[in-house]
Image (cartoon, rainbow over all chains, first blue to last red; front, side, top):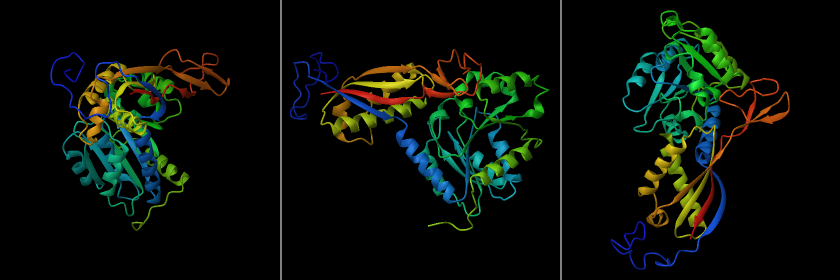
Length: 254
Length: 124
């Protein structure tokens, strides 16, 4: 046997390697009935992350979008305008530390996760990155996911809120093309709103699409360039913090 | 290709369960996937072939024996079922827009369709 298909060719299986597998007769098999969720391990880690963030008094956000929708530029604005800096950022990217350096320049404390060939962040990667972040005096932690509208959807990272970014240059029907991601969002940031006219963005159509896919999501029309809508977004995030009774810790806890 | 990450987790769970049952070989795996779970069955099958064909660098030597020969993969796709709180009734949405067929309300909960579960193993 070749060790692959029982064809009778190739190397013989190592004798004595397995306990008792008859070589010629078809093997008697048995059925095991199970119920194991593939995301069980990730979800457990995510729950641990969430409670860890709460112990540090942090509101944690998972920021999701397609590549190029302006996540990092938005975060630069948020970091510069958040009333009680610094904002913490864990940023996932396939390669390079460019984003982390940009965010540090804007006043954020940023840690980069280079995911290599992984197209989404997972809870254990966030746990490891968070350990490198000095969270003293911090109120807000933003996890900037890998730019991708499919793969990150199913992976809870331990965030309190999911924010999906959709820029006006991407087209009005994006929510219909990627319903699962937009449906999972607590808020949608319609970014580059300052370019809406220049790209003939059909706002009503985009809002109608969002309303059908994610009727409960809060909508913020923002511009990372002009700062439009940032005040409203920050006000909402502060409200979310106080609703959860989160208070920043001056010192690292044990 | 987050399917690859999911199939790596599947292999880990399958090996764990098979070993707990004293099995020496996995013949068949049954996976339940919801139509809202964000996985593409074809991509899942390709990722499955890659993950099961490779030796797991973190795995124990006996993993190779459990997974060394071709393993069949059965996929049970679970259709989406939503619940309309206003009408207090379940419904199957017609497309990506989850509108209640009776009242047209959009804010329905998803009851089924997000599953990603290993539900059966055939071993010897």
